[in-house]
Image (cartoon, rainbow, N blue to C red; front, top):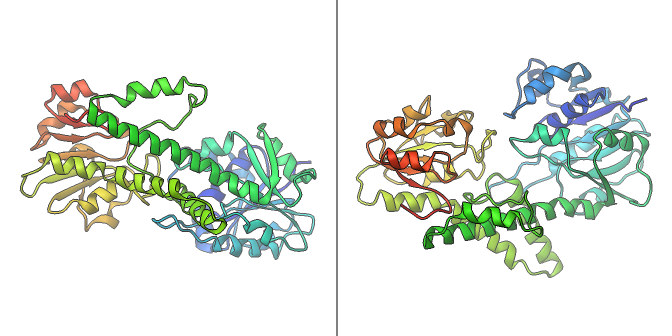
Length: 421
């Protein structure tokens, strides 16, 4: 018989994980002590913008039971504690929500239940929460904003932190993980907690090296997009490497792990110089748009600038460490027009006026900056964009628009990793 599952914490991580469990055929309790949050979920109002989530819930919602009552967990064989852990712009975070919901779940689960902390926590956290009663495990989450449904349904592997990694996993946990048909890697708590941080630090290293070389390309006449395919064919780097030039490290998760690693290095007498360089490189690259804009508009009096994209990346409404938001806050003396297909721009009314569509935002502007690579912006026709503008400056860091078409329309296009026009 399949184990009965519970997920506690109906924010991004918990909701996606519960929906994936239901999609795999498991009866699932989706619990949260916030009555308002549960009422909203029951009515179909989602707390996050995530492609495919509404469809996943609609298809498999009959196996999900939304509740704010902890007693609903009493019959569960396996309960995940999975609240989002808030992250500040400097990478600091507080796992207090995990403690709160872990205590909330423990008051109702049966002794034979298996509890699993799914939220990201610092090394040492889970072992310190061991207590008499239900067994406690830690599992590395695989959430990526904008790709959360895909990652929840098709994980590459499961990393499971255990008090004793040599012992077999409890049947309920083993049965659930087996449904995803991917490798399962048991290890001690501290190793699992550090494994997630390690993965993100390697990604940060790839991003930092990519952005550093892309900037060199801009200065010497090389093209990063010509170099990247050669790196992907090197077996030591690989075809899935993070080699897309970007505007620093957006969001909060990667910077959180850099900050955590710096703290651990300081506590253990390690060298954190490379970690500090990652943070400095991110800040420098985030300001690429401001530097390019300042050069291109030098001498322009009270310029009008359209910023397309306020989310830190496409397919999410998250704005923490957003390059577009950083540009809007840094541009002095300019009149700004803002557009984003998902972000509620009323919260940023003090920065500039919102437009209902991209071309309307660009009307009569001296410069346009496409700061988030939303798919909607790829559909902008340079021949239609240019006549709406007062100037000709286009910041297209991610290469959303066709370069030849931009040149034919007379646009001065600036792109990451390419020589400046």
